[in-house]
Image (cartoon, rainbow, N blue to C red; front, side, top):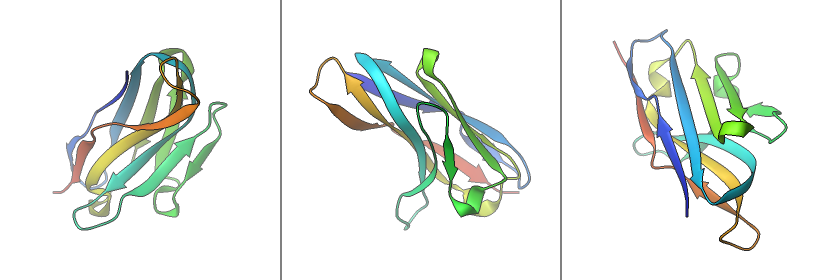
Length: 121
């Protein structure tokens, strides 16, 4: 069994900051690329940022210069530092990871349950 658990969401005023965490646990042998997605009501789930095992990040244009993705391979944890938040950043944020587990053949993509981020005054 592999689980991803997000934390760190909440309510913040425009211009504020939040730090999301995503912790992977279970029968994990190896984690490849990890990513953050977000989904606002009525919208599709879109990728916000991704990071390779080696630490190479990639960002959606809408968050470049404001969000920073990072990971700690020793702790199987990924982070998203969100600064200068805007109301349009309001969404449920999900983490996902491509994981090689001792319980399956090959790699699979796993998703967390999501954490709500609300940017409002």
